[in-house]
Length: 499
Image (cartoon, rainbow, N blue to C red; front, side, top):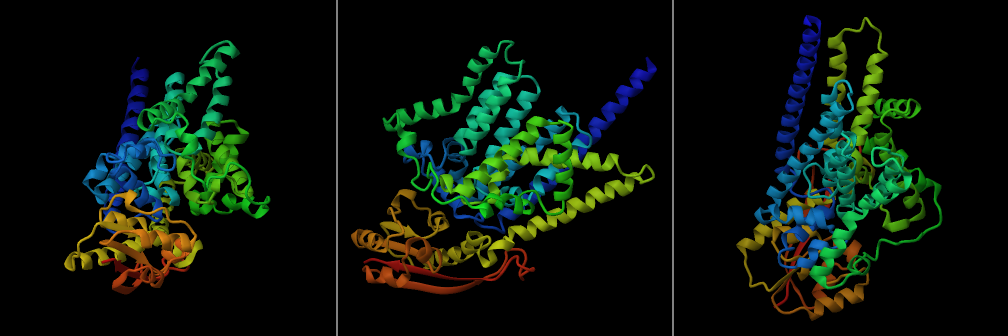
């Protein structure tokens, strides 16, 4: 009896120690994330500000709640904090990201993985996750919903897990593919039902999310085929280019951006070991499903695949657990005479270097030169433009912009934006038709590249230039280039006004 009590006491001590370490890591990343919100005024990509604008104005335009590009669940979730401003909404994302990491830690405990608390830093040291952890993007929310569904499934609440997984389609398009994968799991999981045909019927629960979306969209818009009719034109259903082997291996090449260059060897150990020993098959299969499907879509140019590493933030919990699995395998194979403090120091050093890399990475991805973190830097220039306009007010009926953060800074309705395309003449015609009192906030790079319009073109459409400034934009934290990271960005900002 005494021996059993001592054993239970040891288990409780280990559990308390793991929870304490987990809380310390969560506190660290929470404070770091909130702090970064005040240095990086916008996300690394224009989508962050655009998602914010959809959410902020959804109460005015109810169809935004069911918009295919914006996605219903993120729009509804952020519709509340967005009323208190962009910075507050970013901070809410930090809490959401920390909750994702905490649930990953709890899943590691459910799976009885040693050193479960390491799952938290292994979530955040993924460069793409760290990049988005304080931005108003859909991927962190997807990761949270996904890890919750995994936990429910691991605990035996299979039908509840299926319902949670069905909601993934309401967050990102990857929800469809992971939903199909989940359906395969259900067909081979006898916890759902003993008979195969009953498991087939039960798997229909995975369609709950899209059914809810269709019904709500019909109630708001009166169009039961709204999802189909609202499908973005850039998301081709078929192939738009010939097969490219170079694009097929894109995500494999960019694994350092996805997993992290320092922990990548440990991840590979975990991935190979978990496959060969068939451990954590649900975890590894979710990562591999996304890797294979995104690689195929990219190589064929399907669904407008852009090749962003951030897509894998969707399965960041799986990646973190594979790293943890690999770390435990590595630890178990170290010589017995390796002191425990050395092992802990090795883990701490690897995590510290990974965090440092992530901070540098957030200043600007190395593969894009000065295009890395484009909108995050341009936001500082936009703020300067907005401050100037507040001191030099003019009556404004409508505001047009070339970057979404301009709409955030001026706090303008997203529907004020005309339906610009890449057709210059079409865009000039739209500008000429706009009423007096229209203010145009434009830049010298995105505007010409996306809409083939320069400030001179806008002047020719009947607008007067009232402000011009050239900016040299360095990093928010790192003020000088580091190798190919954080390159100085040249930018021009303009204000044009129609009397």
